[in-house]
Image 1: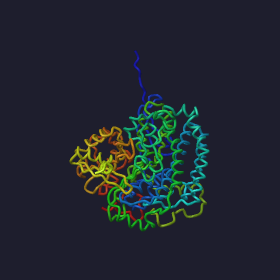
Image 2: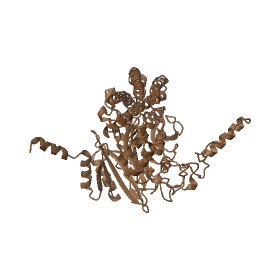
Image 3: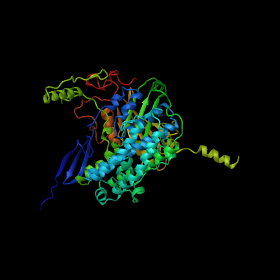
Image 4: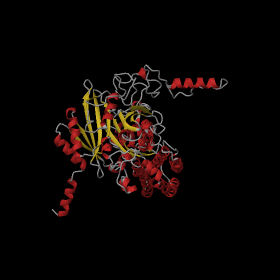
Amino acid sequence: MTEKVEYWVKIPFGPIHPGLEEPEKFILTLDGERIVDVDVKLGYNLRGIQWIALRRNYIQIMYLAERMCGICSFSHNHTYTRAVEEAGGIEVPERAEYIRVIIGELERIHSHLLNLGVLAHDIGYDTLLHLTWLAREKVMDTLEAVSGNRVNYSMVTIGGVRRDIDEKKRKIILDMIKYYHEVFPQIEEAFLHDPTIEARFRDTAVISKRVALEQGAVGPTGRGSGIRDDARWSERLGVYPDLGIKPVMPQDVTGERPRGDVFDRMAVRIGELWESLELIEHALDGMPDGKIKAFPKDNVLYAKLRLMVDGEGIGRYEAPRGELVHYVRGKKGSDKPLRWKPREPTFPNLFSVAKGVIGDQVADFVVAVASIDPCLSCTDRVAVIQDGKKKILTEKDLLKESIRKTREINPDIKGDPTPVGSSCSR
Amino acid sequence: MSEAHANEINEVKEPTKAEKVAKAIADRFPEAEVQVKTNKWGRQRVWVRIPREKYRELMGFIKALDREAHYSIGIEQDWGDELGFLSHLVIHYDDAPAVSLIVDVHAPKDDPVIPDISEVFPIALQFEREGMEMVGIDFEGAPDKRRLFLPDDFPEGIYPLRLDDKGVSEEMVKNAGHPYYLKGGAKK
């Protein structure tokens, strides 16, 4: 009698482009084509944000928080601001709360459209990628018109918002809403009723409710698995309760009970696109007149924060990818926080999907990772560049190398490549 | 006293969900410091400070209060002479507002041992791994003590977010940092 021999193979997946163009490494244990175990290795994009933040003041950290991630830059800035406001007991004018809602929901639309495109691209359905990303351009243009930038909007400040939404900007947003009322039905039709999409996404990478609860899945990943929670709703954040916020569950979109697969996570995002449009409409209608900042100038804010922030504060907000938490601890008399820690929704979602794909085919792994809409740059936060046994190239070395290479290609090049300016310590 | 008036008093006295949770914890754990704080926009949070001996028991108690309790973040920090690990949990989120619960546990720096709670909340393990490498808390009984974020060749015994001499020294920093504030961490 011959014994059955099993061949388990370990393969590295990443750190280059596992599902999205961001670095993260998974070590898959495979039995043939079947995934047996997944180990997650983080830290390929460590930039030492928390360490840097120990040397920055409250206002500087706003910009640092924003630059953790381009896609959810508003969310990070907003949540950090909420944490500082809680620690300092700062009140926000009502008009500012409405403007925060509008920018937050615009960001959600652009992020969800981006992810839907990536999902379609990962199964080779590039027609849909082009459709969604074409639609996404409209919201990016709107954001640029409203805030002045396509990403890193810098709209929020501690105690309010920086820029007002006037009649002209309001018209641009209403224009965008009209455009999306025409385009979203096409996107919805393609994603919810296309047989190719259904065949590929249904019952792929199923995260059961039990696993989702254990691993703390949040956002569309959690709701797709049947956890009815939305930080905007459960936190009663700002003016969201007045605007009629409700967690969007897969049964609201597909009419079936949640199964926790890629399709359900995608369906939640489609539902949230519609919800965001509605929230923006309601916010534009209900926006009262008045101040947009608690403190008129940044230097006043700086001085006030020094005196007001004493103690701890938690900020919670539903970023496009799920619940985002920031923690800030300050002390009276110091202009810097003693501790600032963000936790991004991708962090628990990544571990949920690592459990969820066990038993699936290796070919499904890419779309499974993309289905949680990973934002890996956010997830890696801390790094210190140091001289170990290995040679680690610093920014200076890389610059030197690139100058050498340019000279090699074109020896006649003119101009001085040394950096100009005194603000950078290199 | 009219009936309407009596109702009004009852309504005022009705404790919120957060206060109920705070009372349940304070009754069960007399050694814990429990506070309910309300912020400017009326959001209540329950802040609990627990001795480390009772930490695991408290987490088990929270899980028993709500089977679907959501562990959202673990924050490791340096308090000067102590190391702290603070967890934020969301419980009773079947209707809004949910209870926002913060559990803080401290350990002295010369004996930085805190019990591991990954049996109760499996995701806590990942935050504990971060806590182990970033400030050097030792989570007793954690099933996985590998590094999570830091590279494998990072020197042992250096914890990047420590504010004392076990933190990152000046010599280790290469072209990083603010040009004006290269020296020192946050002020005490």
